[in-house]
Structures are given as structure tokens and as C-alpha cells.
Length: 79
Length: 309
Image (cartoon, chains in turn yellow, purple):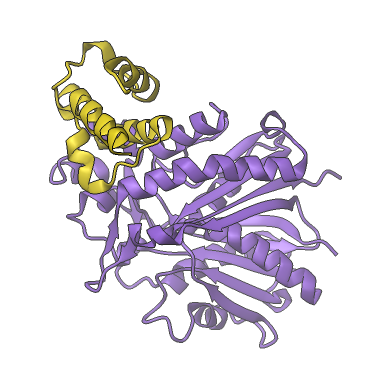
């Protein structure tokens, strides 16, 4: 199952200048300086590492740590 | 007979828009423009300047600076998807007339975007070698200012106008070696011109395509060539944005070897790679990887090796 630590690791790897550990689970990425390009990069890494597809229409559901966890774990359960 | 690259010349219009100025009405910060987009200025052709005019202004220095006359040019291939007028006649025919090329000089347009130069290198090399031609020109001229909506944040901060002319000859500096091509056509709508004649781009779609397909394309060219990435001096990646170049640098594993050079002119589409070839390659570089990617969604990667005397 995807958890907070997995996502923090990806954010640290992909996003420059952000301390991932300081991001609260429900904080929207825009509010902590993760712009649209970094957001796309984070989601791509999630897709590649966890074998899920996040279509464009679901990107808004994956705009926070808790949103990504919920979305990915639901998608993997349904599979 | 082998055909390779002998000379590359480029043309940039004098006018430009400032991205910091555009940022004000496009909900973008200066930090985002400088650090992520990377383009500070976007060159703009004049209102009456045509695609063929820009192309001509890239070709003329080849005649003026090098030992090549119009009569010696046996073929001219023009890469563009923003032709003069409606594209019929083909813009290369209009350019042929402007350059006063001989009737025997074959010309045609190549409809490709950001991957167009690398596609064009292999197409023109193959064409020339098949027909025994010794002097050809590969020209790129694709002014996206014709189709940009200045209020579209996704596209208005990226593209600049420019043109290049590459002289391909049997006496050359750069040998065109192994290559790799492909198309992800089920995402072809990620970059398109609408019925209202405006460019739209799914930025995430194009980013994902490039990030997932270019590293493996580079790997295939290296494998076909029997070399490793450490043997390559520079990777000239299409200058889509600073962000995509830096992302690909990390994914390919070549931090510091893939320059970003487009800050003062923007993403010039098929001209972006030859512009760097003309201006930004040190004299001691022996091996280059070129990789263009974009519209289609298509990619084209090749290896160039310097021909030492």
C-alpha cells in the first residue's frame, strides 16, 4: 500500500527547494510551493513506481498527500 | 559516399516579447518563469515576415560565409508546420524561388514539429546518398507566433520564432550515425492547432511523453552505437522548457551535459536543436546525442560524431 513516506520520498527526489516532511497530509500542493510542473512530475513518479494510471480528469483528486494515498490505494484495491 | 553536416547557420528576428511582462496577465511568477519555464524572452517575426522569409535569412549566411553557391544546391528540405499562406504551394517551393535555386534542385516540406530536425537529418542524408547528391540544405522555420493565443498560459510563455539552415555535404564535420524514432499517436491531441487556428497543449501529456520515452530512445542509440553515455560529450535536447531539459538530464543520468540555451529566444520548435549545434558546441566535442520530441507525439534521436582529419 502507498503511504505518506513513499510520497515524501518522491517529492524529495523530484521537487527542488521543498522540505517534503514539512507538508501536512491535507495541504494542497499549490499552497506549499509545488507548482503544476512539479505536480505532474510527482504524479508521473507515483504512476511509474506504483503501477497506477492517473488520468488528467483525476489530477485534482491527487493534489495533496492524503488525496494521492486515497486515490492510489483505492485504484489498487479495485484491481 | 557519405553525407554529413558541414555547416549550420541560424536566424532570430530582432523583436521579442518579455516573459516577465507577460507573467503579469498570465498568473505566473518571475521565479516560475526563470526557474521552470526558463525562457525570459520570446523572439517574434515581423508582421509581414513570412515563414519563407525567415528560412531565407537562415540560408543566406551559408552562401555568404561558406564556399557554396545557389547553383550548387541539389536539394532543399524545409521543416515546418506553419507554412506560407495555406501551405499550397509548399513553402519550400516559395523559398526555392526566393533563393533563385536551379530548376534541378528538388525541394519539399517535411511536416514535423520539435522532432523535425533530427528526422530531417536522416531523411535528407538518406535521400542524398541514394541519389548521389553532394550538397543539400535542411532548413527549419516554424513560427508558432502565427498560432499562439497570448492569453493561453500553457503556450504563450514558451515559443519563439527562429529559423536555421544546415548544409549537408559529402565533405562534412559531423557524421550522422545511429538513430531512433517513434510516435505515440494515441496522444496526438496533446499538441494541436484548433479550428480557431490556435495552438493548444496538454502540458502534462507532453511532459509525461517526453519523460518516459526520451531516456529509452537515448539508450537505444547508445546500444546500437556500442558506446555508453560517458562517451558522449553533450546531449542536445529539444529546448521545450528548462524544466523538461533538467528532468530529462536526471532521467538519462547526464547532469551537466544537457545545456539549456533558449532563455533569450524561446522554444523555436524544429530550430531549437540546430540553433545549439550552431552556437553552443565546443570545438573539442567529439560525440553528440541529439533528441527532439513533441508534436505527434513523435521523437527522434541520433548520434553525431566529429570527423577528425
